[in-house]
Image 1: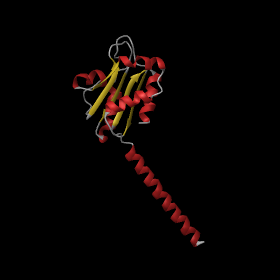
Image 2 (image 1 turned 60 degrees about the vertical axis):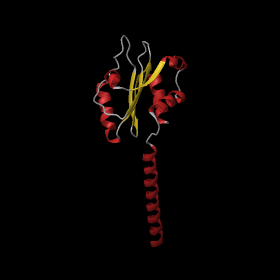
Image 3 (image 1 turned 45 degrees about the vertical axis):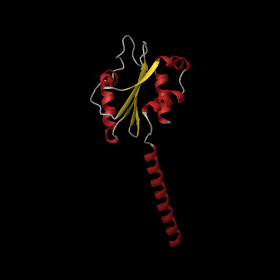
Image 4 (image 1 turned 90 degrees about the vertical axis):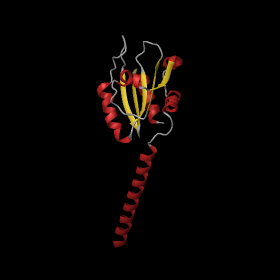
Length: 161
């Protein structure tokens, strides 16, 4: 009987160690490496986007987020980030923007809350974004205002980066 209890105790400890080891690997692998420009390119390449949207991508540009663009894109200039890119139509009546921000890991939730509080889905003339999503992986924030199909397709691609 003591032998069985000893064996059970050892198995419980081993299981605990394996769970801790797997959990710590998950956290470190959740940090995204590489440039945000490359990540944006990967999002468009791998997202299951509707063909009519994919046909318009030649009219989109991805640029570095600058001080001049912050308020119009993020709705605020109060977010501290180390790198940012925005993809949007060059000239169009389409309500669409996709943003990737790299922030200090301790600032991710604060930055996401600032986006949620300040973003305006009605900022475009005559059109509104159907969906707004704000997600993160590690120190990278994915922020999109777009049609529902495009937003969720790109969100899924972001989660698979």
